[in-house]
Length: 226
Image (cartoon, rainbow, N blue to C red; front, side, top):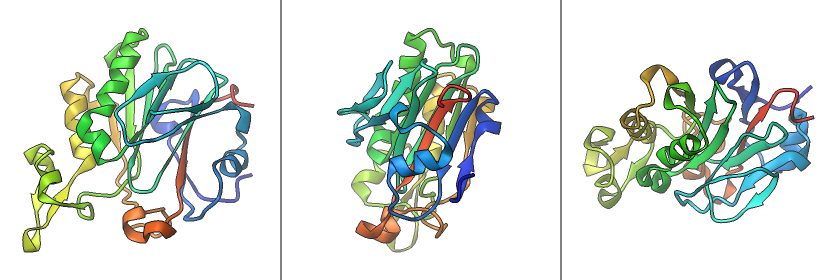
């Protein structure tokens, strides 16, 4: 049995898949965390994560350059990524089994990486009505302070000015607006209320800087990753 703490999202996404995220604030490796969960590390698919808006469709495990999201329909692949304040976005087409896992920092959020992932899924036979989306734990709207130049890139409903003319941006709300405009229904959008900055059990780069660990997210098919 796993000895660390994890967020489990199976009940939100689908009973057919394994969707979870590590919470322990440590420097454990991705492979160690995966094996602790019972995944075969050889099945992991790993995006390079360059804060891009690039999403790739893949059919094999391994590492993939210059991308921040991966989509697959291969049941033997376990999608993975790492975060420490950015949003892990889990996507699942309940009709055809297409899966996606996306890393979204503020650059990716503003650039529309979530919709890029949806578009790629649609290009591979998904129907938007069948896509469930989960925005996992990330830094919240009360803690994500940004400069005026960055604040101006957000929808006006997703940024507020606090004391001393400081701006605070809502990453989840920005992605939600984008998904709604892409015709993902409200009922199919799920958002975690856990803030990685406030929750000391989570990894937060904004809080801990270079000393921050990483939280690993995994999305696999049950009975398909062993």
